[in-house]
Length: 130
Image 1 (tube, rainbow, N blue to C red):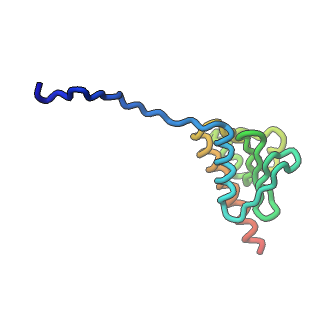
Image 2 (image 1 turned 90 degrees about the vertical axis):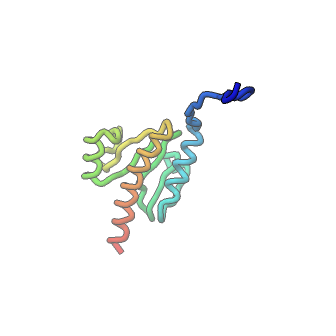
Image 3 (image 1 turned 180 degrees about the vertical axis):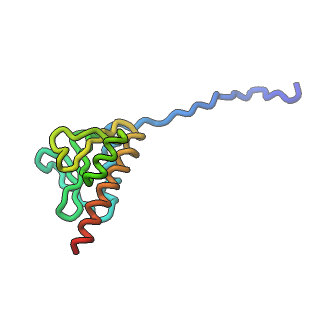
């Protein structure tokens, strides 16, 4: 019986991604946002559960677990809505807000792309004003 692996059990390889809870995703989202330069957070800020600021400008906020309202320039807002990278904001689209909902890891990456775009826009405006 040369060449046979006697007593060796082979398990079929499975690629299973560990799913994070909505709470864990929300915490990772918050930490990523707070790692952006100059960002501060105000929890329980009015109707927003977590509001994020660059200096005194709120550039995004989160309702519940992963419901992100992100403020963009009007050009960027139009582009991301046209490209279906976000949903229209229900109450303040005229202010440049869009909505991105984080339900799983892939949604987190997409939301962070929009959040970085917002942060760069508002942080850049602050630098230009100085």
